[in-house]
Amino acid sequence: MNTPADSRSTEKVGIHETARREKLQRIRDLGHDPFGGRFDDHLAIGEIRSREGEIEVIPIPEGSDRRSPEMHGPKVRAAGRIVLQRKKGKLIFLDIRDWTGQIQLFLGKNQVGEEGWELAQCLDLGDLIGVDGELRKTRTGELTIFVEKLHILTKTIEPPPEKFHGMKDPELRQRRRYLDLAFTEGVLERFLRRSTIVQSIRETLRGEGFVEVEGPTLHTIAGGAAAKPFATHHNALDIPLNLRIALELHLKRLMVGGMERVFEIGRVYRNEGISPRHNPEFTMLEVYQAYGNYESMMDLTEKCIVGAIEATGQDFKLPWGEQTIDFTPPFARKTYDELFEEQAGVSPNDNAAVKVVAEKIGFETAGKHPDVIKNEVFEEQVEDSLTGPIFVMDYPASLCPLTKRKKDNPAIAERFELFICGMELANAYTELNDPDLQKANFENQLAGLAEEDSMAKMDHDFILALKHGMPPAGGLGIGIDRLVMMLTGAESIREVILFPLLRPEA
Image (cartoon, rainbow, N blue to C red; front, side):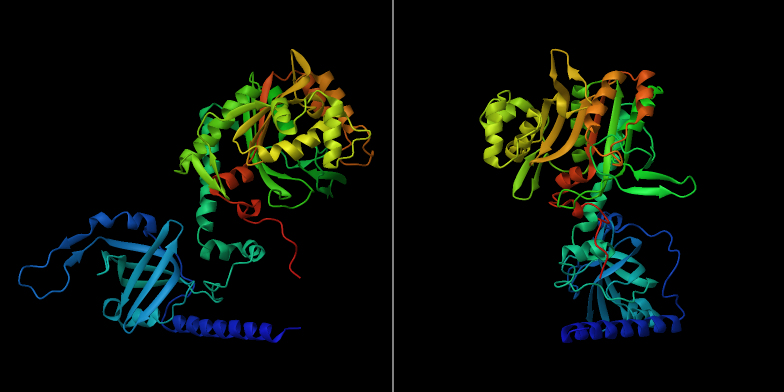
């Protein structure tokens, strides 16, 4: 049941829609299609603004009674959404915006004619219009298109959000992303920047000789990560399936087949919680390089990130919340054990001391492997201190079942994670390609899981593939959404995913 405030709000919206529908009908009566059509040869507003230098200013002749210099500019055609509207008698000033910028329009009754002026009276905020006119400047120096012909391209029925009251609620902004993009300052630019970042990563990898592939998103066995999958069912084959939780195992199969440098940028799905750093559906980059190792992947990770920053035209020092992150290469590199001892204050090899630290924090330690206890302390006491960007290298081998061990110390895995502001952005290994050791590691990882658990199944075909010979390799995974957060100043992952998962509206 509506409250009185709800009723007033509904009534107000109804009045606005009625008025807009009346204008829509008036547009039809004037002989125009209120939903427009093809509009060729218009220029992007950013391109139009770049032509400011073509405007010719003719000085006022000596003795003339003119109050302003004569001005001539190029003829231009533009299209965009009305985001500002000001009427002054027989003059109308509009601001229109497209995905490259915003520009002012001047509409005068004498300039657009009687029919054009009638059409102009039917315009509202949010409408999409096209114009033909001359690019000049107003007396105040504002770059403006002086409209000679007006075209209606789409009449809007719903009013846009109020400038100062609408689209402040984060959930509403994500639920009505189309309005957020159109009317919230900086949002469209952030998502366009995301596209530039992803494109730059692709170009960097292709420049290094990698080829892009597409793996399956429906897996019979959820593998490649320790995560809970989304379960589904294929009706025709009558088999259970899972949405993929990682890209890894199929890309490695391709290396067995001879594709020596491969990558995929794709969606993965993990049936887990939602937070400012987690969304159940997110975008991963995974890269595999034959005859490389985790150090090769460090160099490649740095190259991808530096290239993305350069592609977006930004400085290497970028703000994120109250911090400034310095991406100037080379990024710092430190071992897991070095950082542990610095922050926890005990030797990582002293299991008894590590256990005491863990229990002081509040962790249960009974029955847990010493490396698991150590990693819980690491996550609690070390990760938040990692402003970065910093490569954390050489993790305990027991935590990394897909990773090759160091030759001189089998207890250490050749793995790194890249941290920035306490958040993991990348994870990489010197890949394990010994089929017997890989099988044993899988068995240890799966031990104790219920047989019906979707993660408790061995991927025997992957082991078979390894038996046919996978070259020694480096492998890398980068969370694209988290990287975009860092490079665009967004503090929530939901601000860089166009349509994050939301509860259904009541």
